[in-house]
Image (cartoon, rainbow, N blue to C red; front, top):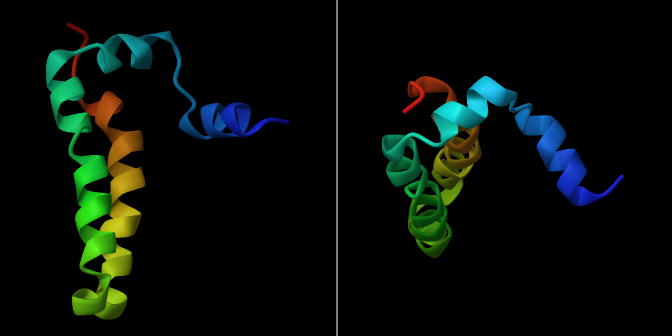
Length: 72
């Protein structure tokens, strides 16, 4: 099994989720996950073990984002 298929199975996006994924608000807010990861990794020495929280929140937000917005 390839990495791409493993990730696709974790996200479990059906047709309705893909429609919600196309919502402009979902697209705009989806772009907040990568900056969160970058800032967290960059400031990991200041945050210490508290850096684990935003690192865990970024993938959760990426998974949850297309499920909370309605279809466009």
